[in-house]
Length: 224
Image 1 (cartoon, rainbow, N blue to C red):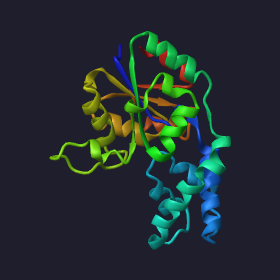
Image 2 (cartoon, rainbow, N blue to C red; image 1 turned 90 degrees about the vertical axis):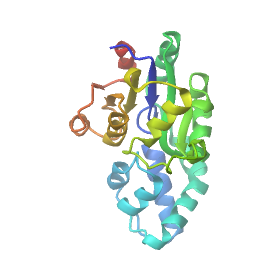
Image 3 (cartoon, rainbow, N blue to C red; image 1 turned 60 degrees about the vertical axis):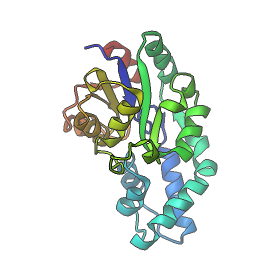
Image 4 (spheres, rainbow, N blue to C red; image 1 turned 180 degrees about the horizontal axis):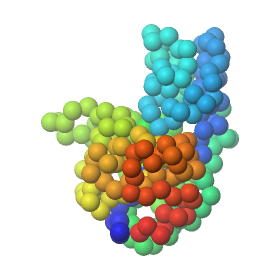
């Protein structure tokens, strides 16, 4: 199978952000005088919108979720950036895919406030410019007749990327580390590939019945 376009998840797929996310969630809870959360519970929500993390993995009262997400975004740069790195072979594999003529984009639940700086700081922008980075806050790209975007696992983010970039689902591979990514891609009509080194295990990924599962990012090159 040859793919002309690849849509990448960010957290747990391109970048190892788990430690940074956990540190920032715990820092947010501390500022709000709320009890510390279970790191494993936080990790299970990576890939979902930020408010779902505080709703599902912490004891944050429902009426303080917006406060929590605001504090999180404010303190994320100081607490998380030094603890975020790319997974092995990401840049070299992106370079190879680019040389093969594969067009690439990012489809992330992360807000552009943190997503765009990370794409730049980690060197990904050389291969995936910010115009091909899609995340929370992109409703302004929708046509007037389209409904507001729903988060993963709904297909909306992948559909938006394909709409803006004029690409076809049948030639597109969605790559992610969670079932939320794989369900999004499948619902959008794309082929899907799970990565087993991220935030969910191979058995968990298999429940979403992806077309491929890889254990190293470099293995992606063999699929195109």
